[in-house]
Amino acid sequence: MPWHREEPNVVEHLRADLARKYPDLHLSLDGDVGYLRGTFPVIHDGVELDRFTVEIRIPEAFPREIPIVFEKAHRIPHDVDWHTFQSGNLCVIVPEEWFLNPHSDSLIAYLDGPLRNYFINHALAEAGQPRPMGARDHGAPGLFEAYGEIVGTTNHSAIVKYLDYCTAKKLKLHWKCPCGSGRRVSICHLGKVIELRKRVPRWIAEKALNRLKQALAPTSAPASSPVKA
Image (cartoon, rainbow, N blue to C red; front, side):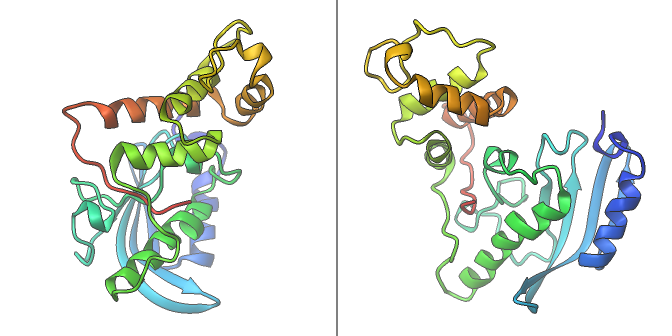
């Protein structure tokens, strides 16, 4: 079901929240896609540091798909080193990192968190200063970095295996341990796998694996590198 039909009055509530926190962002609907258009203030300790003109698309599948953000005043180059995709939308955060956030169903939380951090990073980089939140590598290396932090290893094969075990409907104890020891999971990292399966829902693990597959495809276009969560 589209995000704006999930609960009664969800659009009215969102408009009220926007009027309170982001009065210069205006919500409209085009079919099942929502649009926020206007200016986004970068506020720190109650002080407005900067302001960006944006268009934010709220996909039909939100919150299982993250908002798509475009900077409309041409301040941010369409270049991977400036954390944008070739299509011009901003590479704000690795989606699966955000999906694991307990507030990932809140658009306001997305604006307050990842998007604010992205623009703070950009404003400082624009002025020749280091990005305070850091940034991930481009493409697959950045995804492995993000997913490795989720599953607790830097080994690429183990990252894929742990995510794969999170997608399984039922864990089989005779399976080989994702760590690469060659032992059965039942006598190796069973506790870790069980904990991950509780923490990382199947649909998130599936999205992560599909994103890695696309990033590793020989014909895939270079991806940008998002700000760290």
